[in-house]
Length: 161
Image 1 (cartoon, rainbow, N blue to C red):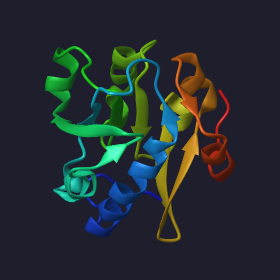
Image 2 (image 1 turned 120 degrees about the vertical axis):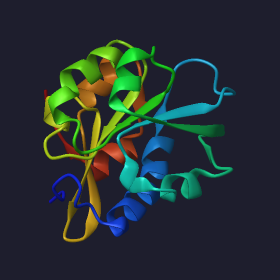
Image 3 (image 1 turned 90 degrees about the vertical axis):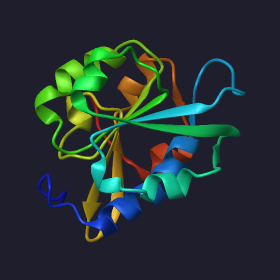
Image 4 (image 1 turned 45 degrees about the vertical axis):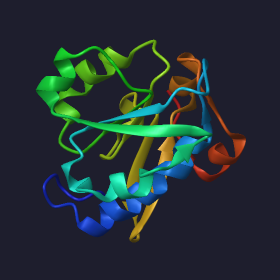
């Protein structure tokens, strides 16, 4: 179960930061694999520096990683400039507007809030028995031209629709 917004523990975000990299690595984007992989973080203040530490000097699928943190107002005003968008807890009320910005673009959406995969987020993380788990909405992934490793699909909870 995910903690209520504002009550996430540092341990949750440490585990989530470490888990995100291998999940993202099992996704393939169309286009130039030599360009940096741009990760946008919407909310995500709970990460502190954890995600930066995990991704520092990292490559994902052979691509260097760049991370940018967004506030909701900044995110909604700027054009999409990311390949991956992580949507943290506390953004559920704005989810339709957030997903509208990524609609039809090869942007992998990741979430960390109860039920986001059923609401259109492609990959949603959740905590279960103190461990990070995830669910995938493969229809959403496919409709934007991304492909996901069959290995990833085997270990995820699949969400239809």
